[in-house]
Length: 259
Image (tube, rainbow, N blue to C red; front, top):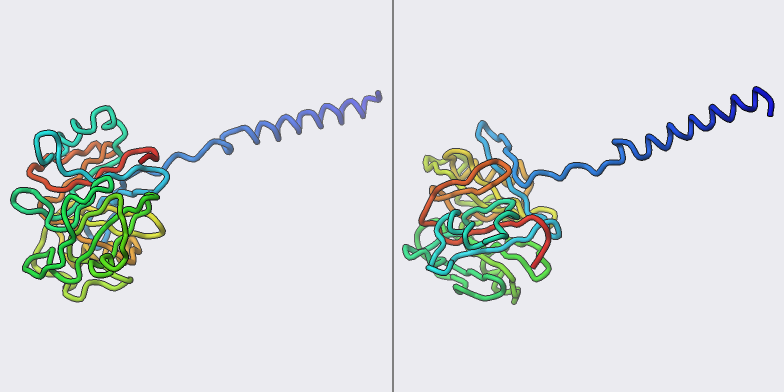
């Protein structure tokens, strides 16, 4: 073999090694998973947004433990047992009576705990239209206006009714003013592109700003108000577990798919 041929062969071997090194180098590493919860600024206020993605997480609703209503995240953690290590986040999930029974529909693991409430009355729950957040048997999340939900004949695996609907069909609730004088730490849930986005404000905000955040910043065509003042979040990645007690229905999303 000539000297020139040997030099070319050595060059070719080095080039192949470099190419193979690039193929198995850092560029081939799997991207880091998105955090379950993140903070977003909007109109001067902070909001924590937590994602539920079917197939990536497992959503459950919870109300009672062995001794009655759970009421706080400490009791929820105890009720989950070893599964508590899988918690991506948890949040309060709908309005309740003084005895902490749900005001409206509540379905837990396919079992109806409280019926759909189509009555009229005073307060945020009855600020028509109100609606239902529900998850079907395949884990897909939905937000529907109460009457529309009643007409679906759906058999949700998980469901909680609350009100008002902050956003419906891409439009803000007609009775919510842009920036009213009522301020509270608020939480709610919107559905977009097959995902559920649970939101809680960092500090007291108006209904209008909270609704605009879900519609304009997150782009949710449908979003449901869950509650205010008592709103609370448990987000291990953020090293946060609010200590409110006396809570009613709770939503918890666990890492990893399951049923």
